[in-house]
Length: 362
Image 1 (cartoon, rainbow, N blue to C red):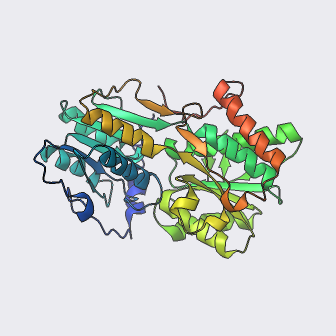
Image 2 (image 1 turned 180 degrees about the vertical axis):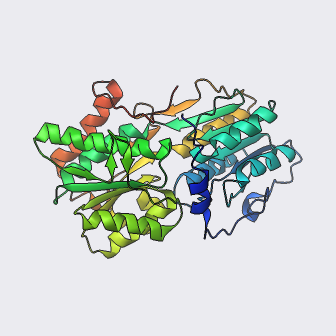
């Protein structure tokens, strides 16, 4: 994955105003800090969030859920996290966990790639892992997700459900783990147009030029709402925010609109992670919890995690998917559901090839 240098200023700006009820460096929430008194050797799994924080209803929350699930399965695993308030905290927080002698250190998010690479190179005997990046270092286990595949399904679905003939998408920052969703979404709409001889427009993203709309934040809900308001004003009646917690500004506004427009959420099923299910058509799911859980359990079991090939989630291995339609289930026509299902099968089988400049390398 290409470097995210150059995003530093934007990510620091994105951190402004972030409210964190967080643990200080290395401290865990009380309910997860109890190691138990059995005297057995514990395996410490320590997570550093990016600026979105552990409660982002998105990729940070997903990763923490994965560690919680690993702890449930193996009570010898101790888990804790620290939240980063700015990009400058990333390497500091990672190094803090090295100094605490954590056995497994998890970095969350593509913005942490450079800091994780630096920390890993300075500590070659330390096992690191990272979500949404591949720093290319032997002691960093990368977990990446080809969300363009599931995004393609969501784009086709959105095109089939749009009444205005316009759908929109926007990102938090123009980085690969974000633009990969937008590429897939745009291609899914294009596939629908070709199959149905329609002309549904995608607002907010041009795959060819890799230019589009961004909130410049993964946590400021007002910034997310501003971007989606602009897309809706241009006629979009379905919007896909790829902006972590900032996207909650879009879901809450869509819910308040009384059905004027709806949302495709990303990362975790929005009907399980947000209070705005009634406005959410579906979610492009990144199965971060299972990938993190499996990595932590393997590491705790003494397995050396291989940086190459790491893990790449696809439709075929259930690493990515689209969520159930929930409140929209009765509104999505049966033939459209069947077509979306067939697209999954065709992508998994290689009959349909989905491409994105941001796709993870194996």
